[in-house]
Amino acid sequence: MDAEKVVHTGGCHCKSVRWKVVAPSSVVAWDCNCSNCNMRANTHFIVPADDFELLGDSGKFLTTYTFGAQTAKHTFCKICGITSFYYPRSNPDGVAVTFRCVDPGTLSHVEIRHFDGKNWDSAYNQTGISSYSKVEK
Image (cartoon, rainbow, N blue to C red; front, side, top):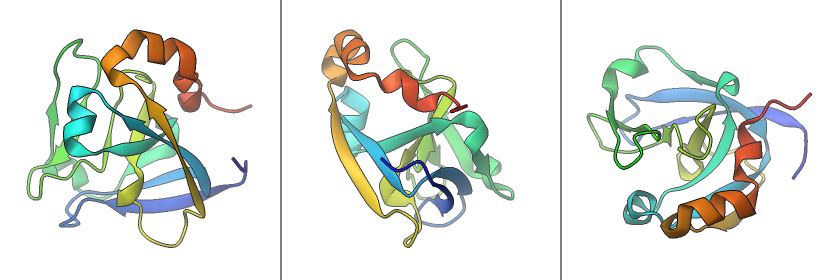
């Protein structure tokens, strides 16, 4: 993936939740089969939390769902129900951005990788997913 970073904007379907994220134009997105991601067909790329910013009054339109280990914070819009981003269990220091919720024009390439969320511990250890929320120096 290229190292050049750009500012992406995006949000939910009704546009009540808007955000910007600094990330490469070419990203690795994770297709997870855990019970939650699988039901929502959520494929997401992960960035350090400091590279993500909610815009305007978006926070008042968000609600959060947690389950299991209670580490992941699944955020979604109270109006349209779309999860445009969330705080993943694999990367509690990062943000998982739903790549389909990025506004057109800034993503040049999306490489889809599988994350076996049904076997979370072994997938976490084998994929290197935790490195995606670390700040590059």
